[in-house]
Image (cartoon, rainbow, N blue to C red; front, side, top):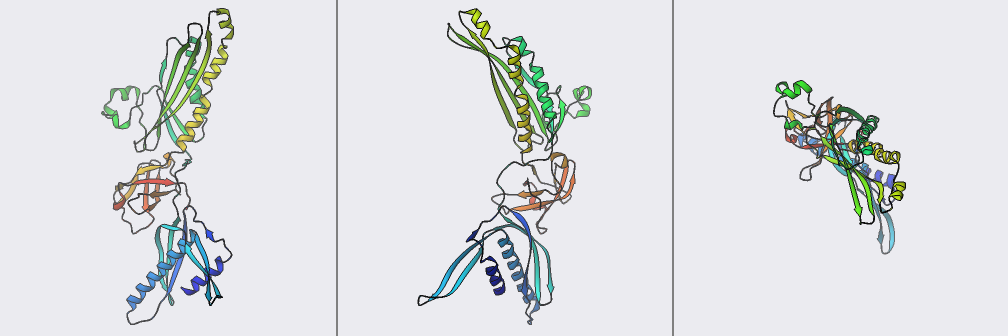
Length: 378
């Protein structure tokens, strides 16, 4: 190991005092150790293997960053040498041995390691998500001016058109079908009269259901001498993820449309009332921004699922239809257990088979744990 330390010191002499560990990445490194011919060859090989693995892990940790400190060696106040100490700053999150063999007078161990630190929660940036829009719930006060009340279907259509324009969303319309969770179907579709006659739609694992709620309220506030009149538009997009593995979320938008004031001067009240065209434009204004917010919120949802064991293989009920990519990397990050990485063994439209990065880890030991996919290309 002396030649290794000297080499590292020479290479890193020109670097800053501290090289920060980066977010995690995969590195492939090789460690080696000399074989000494002794009477007990088995012990010698085992010792060399462990030393080679130790060196490989040290090199992998250095790939994740290094802390470098220096000091002077002195004798009677005379500096006799400058010393550098190099310590790995990166953490080895997981590793697997990719190759090991005796080569000449050395034992070689090659590993693939995940080093650094796991990225913090951020936007998943899904490339594509399937969304089904179900029947909306609409509430309109009777006192809302008819000219505005009649624009609610136009508002709904505008939101749908804006959602259809979002390139990352695959939209299915079920506007005549009330949303019912798939777990709430007590009768199989083949025996359900309503399903046979009018159809019913469920949402697959990892896909999304959107239930719009549009409420139009009429309100008057003020005193006997002056009352301010306004219409309040409240839009909520209730989003539910198929499989109920990830909690649902809601996007809200509220718009207040002033209708004018009521005073003893009625002629003045009429002149100060806004034009219907202006009110309609204000009513329809949230459609585009809300559609963009929905697309962003859905595409930022983490790809999360629960590992199932089928015929000895680890399987999750989501696939390419839900945005899983063939080069995706899954992680099991449980504070009470070691971090485990999984790679895609086979990708199907609505199903994915996975394999642990470390082949020595039993698939059965990971069943039931939650996997999260990271935005990372190994």
